[in-house]
Image 1 (cartoon, one colour):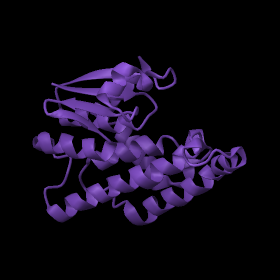
Image 2 (cartoon, rainbow, N blue to C red; image 1 turned 180 degrees about the vertical axis):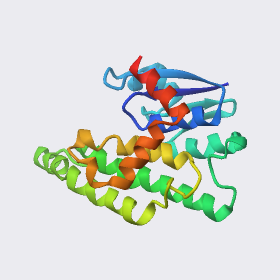
Image 3 (cartoon, rainbow, N blue to C red; image 1 turned 90 degrees about the vertical axis):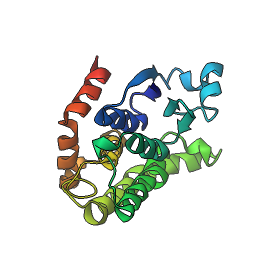
Image 4 (cartoon, rainbow, N blue to C red; image 1 turned 90 degrees about the horizontal axis):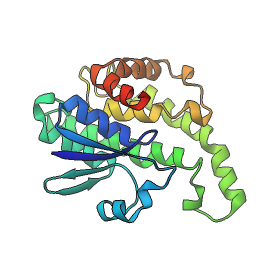
Length: 205
């Protein structure tokens, strides 16, 4: 059985949504990054990176959201969470890579500028730039990358749960999501899916 190490409010929500959408048999281990659970010796043995998500499989531990969002659909093909066509599947991986390498990093400048500089003024400047940078990024996603009604077109995929996760961070970063009507509607429809409702109910419990 799979075991997902997850923290509420983090990008690991996308992996949890994927497991639920796939109908996977898994165990959920909820961690508190605020309390430093990710830095305990026990967890560092599982994921030396000290971050979530980490997915324990019968072949070892998978880390990094794009990898997990590839593995879950490929081991649960009946759920149809990735396209079968090689070109379309590559487009899905490209979208998820953009969310990981650009969107998430833009958000990380809010609280984690120390990863790039020790200069307090530079860190403050990074934090101040977060809303502007995120607006530009999500404008590109809404206008150029989002096919509709789901990220890749007519069918829900793991890209939708990932986009839902990162789009949900915008209000906390000072970005008004009303300026992205297509993505806002998408977020509401994702939240209304039975698997996602189940996940969100776990968070509220």
